[in-house]
Amino acid sequence: MDARAPEAPHGDALRDAAENLFQELQEHFQALIATLNLRMEEMGSRLEDLQKNVNDLMVPAGIEDSIQGQM
Image (cartoon, rainbow, N blue to C red; front, side, top):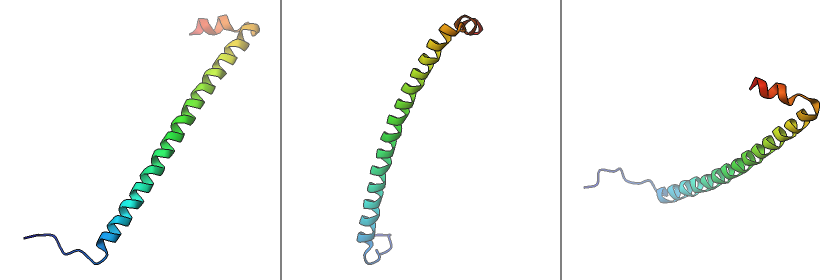
Protein backbone atom coordinates (compact mmCIF):
# COMPACT_ATOMS: atom_id res chain seq x y z
CA MET A 1 0.00 0.00 0.00
CA ASP A 2 1.32 3.45 -0.91
CA ALA A 3 1.68 5.70 2.16
CA ARG A 4 1.96 8.92 0.15
CA ALA A 5 -0.95 11.31 0.00
CA PRO A 6 -2.78 11.45 -3.30
CA GLU A 7 -1.36 14.02 -5.68
CA ALA A 8 -3.24 17.24 -6.25
CA PRO A 9 -4.61 17.86 -9.71
CA HIS A 10 -1.99 19.42 -11.96
CA GLY A 11 0.74 18.24 -9.57
CA ASP A 12 2.81 16.88 -12.44
CA ALA A 13 2.54 20.15 -14.36
CA LEU A 14 3.57 22.15 -11.32
CA ARG A 15 6.51 19.85 -10.62
CA ASP A 16 7.60 20.06 -14.29
CA ALA A 17 7.38 23.86 -14.21
CA ALA A 18 9.44 23.96 -11.01
CA GLU A 19 12.07 21.63 -12.51
CA ASN A 20 12.25 23.76 -15.67
CA LEU A 21 12.65 26.92 -13.62
CA PHE A 22 15.35 25.30 -11.51
CA GLN A 23 17.19 24.17 -14.66
CA GLU A 24 17.01 27.67 -16.11
CA LEU A 25 18.30 29.19 -12.88
CA GLN A 26 21.15 26.69 -12.81
CA GLU A 27 22.13 27.59 -16.39
CA HIS A 28 22.11 31.30 -15.57
CA PHE A 29 24.14 30.69 -12.43
CA GLN A 30 26.75 28.70 -14.37
CA ALA A 31 26.97 31.47 -16.97
CA LEU A 32 27.44 34.02 -14.19
CA ILE A 33 30.22 31.93 -12.64
CA ALA A 34 31.98 31.65 -16.00
CA THR A 35 31.75 35.43 -16.47
CA LEU A 36 33.08 36.08 -12.97
CA ASN A 37 35.99 33.69 -13.49
CA LEU A 38 36.90 35.42 -16.74
CA ARG A 39 36.76 38.86 -15.12
CA MET A 40 38.91 37.68 -12.21
CA GLU A 41 41.53 36.36 -14.64
CA GLU A 42 41.48 39.69 -16.48
CA MET A 43 41.83 41.57 -13.21
CA GLY A 44 44.78 39.40 -12.16
CA SER A 45 46.47 40.09 -15.47
CA ARG A 46 45.91 43.82 -15.07
CA LEU A 47 47.34 43.74 -11.55
CA GLU A 48 50.45 41.98 -12.84
CA ASP A 49 50.81 44.63 -15.56
CA LEU A 50 50.37 47.38 -12.97
CA GLN A 51 53.04 45.86 -10.73
CA LYS A 52 55.43 45.63 -13.67
CA ASN A 53 54.75 49.25 -14.62
CA VAL A 54 55.33 50.41 -11.04
CA ASN A 55 58.57 48.46 -10.88
CA ASP A 56 59.67 49.93 -14.21
CA LEU A 57 58.97 53.47 -12.94
CA MET A 58 60.78 52.88 -9.66
CA VAL A 59 64.08 52.10 -11.39
CA PRO A 60 64.58 55.55 -12.97
CA ALA A 61 63.30 57.18 -9.78
CA GLY A 62 66.05 55.45 -7.80
CA ILE A 63 63.59 53.78 -5.44
CA GLU A 64 64.26 50.17 -6.45
CA ASP A 65 67.15 49.55 -4.06
CA SER A 66 65.41 50.96 -0.99
CA ILE A 67 62.20 49.02 -1.64
CA GLN A 68 64.03 45.72 -2.22
CA GLY A 69 66.04 46.30 0.94
CA GLN A 70 62.82 46.59 2.94
CA MET A 71 61.44 43.31 1.60
